[in-house]
Amino acid sequence: VQLVESGGGLVQAGGSLRLSCTASERTVSSAAMGWFRQVPGKEREFVAVISWSNGIADYADSVQGRFTLSRDNTKNTVYLQMNTLEPEYTAVYYCAAGPGRTEYEALYDWWGQGTQVTVAS
Image (tube, rainbow, N blue to C red):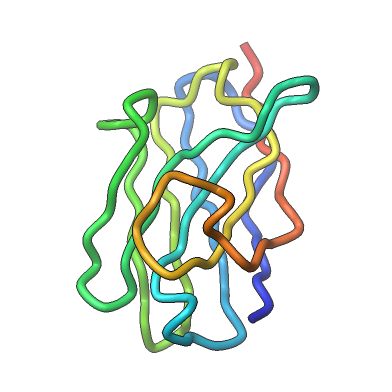
């Protein structure tokens, strides 16, 4: 499974961005799509995950209410809508495919190349 992210960039605090991640295929082993983010010098952290089959999404507490994850099964694409962004959300955002909705990155087998999100104050 190959994953291609897009949509990162520079935005002012309070602004919005939408990230996309397109998968080359969907399999039993890639039944869910997750997003993680990483700041230099820190560990990668879970952001959100969605199930392809029923569209149920889970979020990290830090983004609950600000981020919305959705999917378009016809396009094999998930969308991470990020609103009311703050400078502390600056990071490289990665999408990943795994067998189910989980926050544990070790369970994800496929990863995208990452897309930079920079929120200016």
